[in-house]
Amino acid sequence: MLRIGIDVGGTHTDAALLDGDVLLASTKAATTADVVTGITNAFDAVLADGKIAASAVQCVMIGTTQFTNAVIERRELAPVAAIRIGLPSGKGLPPFTAWPDDIASAIGGMSFMVAGGYLYDGELLAPLDEAAIDKAVAQIAASPVRNVAIASAFSPLNAAPEESVAAKIRLAIPNARITCSHTIGGLGLLERENAAILNAALLPFASRVVTSFEAALVQRGMTCPLYISQNDGTLMGAEFVRQFPALTFASGPTNSLRGAWKLTGLEDAIVVDIGGTTSDIGVLQSGFPRESYNIIDIGGVRTNFRMPDILAIGVGGGSLVSADGLQIGPQSVGHHLTSEGLVFGGDQRTLTDIAVAAGAFDLGDRARVSDLPAGLVNTARGGMHSMLNNAIDSMRPGGRKLPVILVGGGAGLVTETLDAATQTIIPPNSGTANAIGAAIAQIGGEAEQMLSYQQIPREEALAQVTAEAERAAVAAGGDPASLTVVDVSETPVPYMEEGAMRLRVKTVGALMAREPQGDGA
Image (tube, rainbow, N blue to C red; front, side, top):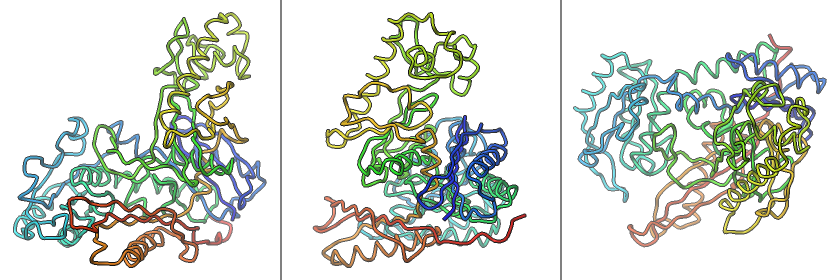
């Protein structure tokens, strides 16, 4: 299958063209303000290098940080009405509790709390307060707010209350955009509610972003399917992203990890993605990113999105270096490196300048760093390697050493042996590993239930949850015949009856193949 992977970053838009498992071409283009121009420039470069007609491309996969940046920068966020179903519990902690004031103000903070929901053991918490729900729906209908987040106590175990309220909203407000928390978060009401609110706030922006991506394909005569990378290294169809943009929050680091796997074939390794400002460090387990089980902070808001376990440190090509070489970062010139770094005619001393002075990089004008003292250069390089070693050491699974794969535009900064690794690898095409990771991504689906092995045999429970995960994968665009289970997590629940288990299944599979249609627009 001919496919193009795109990773839209803050500085560069990377692209990779693959034919099956063969990399035909890859490139880096500048990310543009309108995004579409940067994407089309990247398309043009890889298609020209690969000598492939745009109309022959069968699939395009895009990874993007736009939705993460929107939350962090408090922009493009729509006002949201939050409905929590859970009274009498949780009355003292209403929706938007502990949110930073600026993002709470950006989203609006319209909220309602009504009785209803279930307990962890499946028992009814309280009957659904239909009158209170009707009143809340009427108030939303009378307001300009059209984005709604609904969260109910233990809805991942019983979503009926959320679905009932959503049905009432759709009847009263046909143009409402709704996120039910059971579709996007795990157990933990407050964090799941926060995740649903953030997702709902991004829905109008998501529609515009996906439309702009589709426009970029049309401009290049492509009629093939478009997919977007999500947090776990798998893909979502364009329409799915319009409903769940928040599931893309960690797609950038995830694509880099999957690209590192593709470039090396190593299924168990530590990956260090060195960019202009930071180094993102993650762990590959069986070829997929290791998942974090911690509460995830997104722009100051606590959530329970399923995210890769990533450690970011302030080591990048644009990291500023002190005059004695002892301080590296976290300040960085970032995407201004090519104008502010010493070797490019600027006046800021960066790690790239140190690397050029040491002969590790051949960039810019080396004469401009020829007067840097050898002591400064050696101290800075030693400090950088020490920071990376310490960070890698803290990420080692079970304390055991693994191979370390270096990717990203700054991979060449590392020239010494990393003591925390069994070996250090910089594979060919490491600079565009993120785009390659996007290009090879599969469709995935997950399902989670809390159940008792005393009431339902384990094999039957596993089959039940697996079937639900497979349905999710097919809904996202997966080929049913290719699906395979890649992870089963069974967690005993000590406060419930004997045999109670939290069961989660993840399945992945190939894209449903579709031939390009004609020569495009």
